[in-house]
Length: 438
Ligand code: PHE
Image 1 (cartoon, helix red, strand yellow):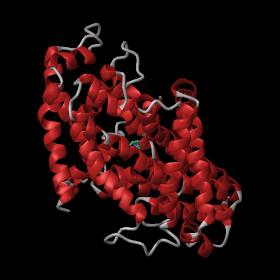
Image 2: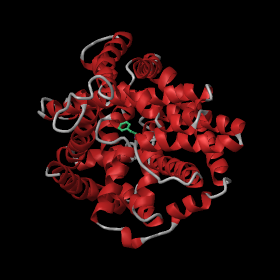
Image 3: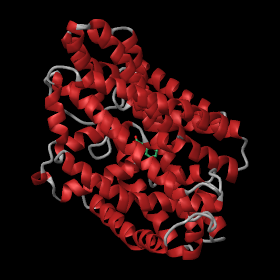
């Protein structure tokens, strides 16, 4: 549940639906599944093998598996990148918190012109986004402070089923709206003419991000997993839940967007601009129902972001407790303060600090670009290379079969190992270099 919680997040709600529509509907989903199976899943398994075999989080894991090796210094990068991500992810989680408050206050039933400009006004304000960022990061830190079992697992165990139930209700409602069939058509019509190199690259990038790879969240979570747990099964399960949620939110979001007769967008614009407009339009005929659905929707966004943020936050805490000897409480406070400060700068980069730019990127976009375009890919490359080339093949087999107690046909293992050793590093290497040269 915690693993799925990490995977299911904003990527599923604000990017996947758009990519599906833009890159050929069912054709894209098919390519996405392939990308998951042949590239992202091997990287997922690599992180899982390192984490569970070492029983340590990112930095210590490499040292334990190959003592004294220089790999651990590279691994420091994967301690830093989740910290970077959680800082700005928390700003977006804060926006979701703010919008949840707005839906409780029926703000989407205001005159349409006000709703359209709402996001710009909200995000460029100094205080409200900062307060919401503080609430969101505080919730994240609070869950992590309770520990892995009593905090993260307990929260994920009840929130994941609730999340699925909520997205199911929203999807059914959304698809029952007149005009939603255009959204369904946008999503499912397979259009192979839209499939090209970019489609494949987008599918790979999305599956990578969506499965939370390259920053050691999966590695850290697996360091807590019992030796009896079948890694292959839990990996496939996580990928399947993640895909199911992404497909359900695609129908929920695009059904409503098309029913309201607006252009589908992606990123923050889709959730914080298009969707409020949908609630505004719907609210003219059904004010009560539309307000309830708005509350459900922003609660879904908030919880899904929270379970992802928790996994990112835990990486830093695991490092500080395992390697720096801090107590969990102090580690949480330390990371909270540091992430709050960086997040505050990201939040202000939509308002008073908007003119501070490096290249044409504000602080928020700079953190996002650095983390998702460079650090994540580099991290994924590092993990898969370590398992494929530095660890013993027999150790990898041992880990995937839980010390030989679980069945894994040798030919299947050889295939997975081949993907880890050659295919995945090659593909991520290409993605990384093409990212560098733009
Ligand atoms: N998978 C999360 C999402 O889809 C994002 C994430 C990336 C979470 C990396 C943790 C680590 O939003």
